Image (cartoon, rainbow, N blue to C red; front, side, top):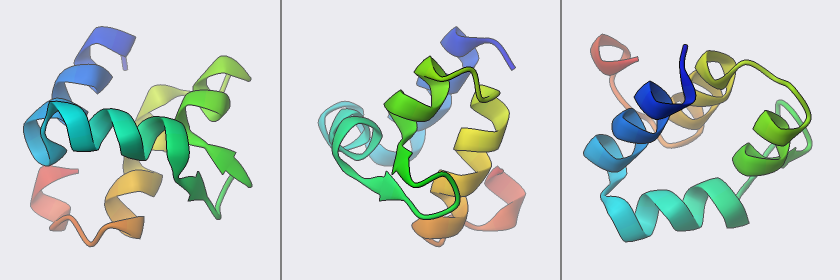
Length: 63
């Protein structure tokens, strides 16, 4: 998944401000780091998106 697609999904699902806060402040248990840190470490944005969806109970149809 391209990073631009990832950012669009985050903003659409959570809104710009909340999405940015989740991405930079919320530690995803699957990775032991924030979504932004995980992407910076080279983890595929698709995997980060799925972890965020699971953590925040986003319906699977939107994963």
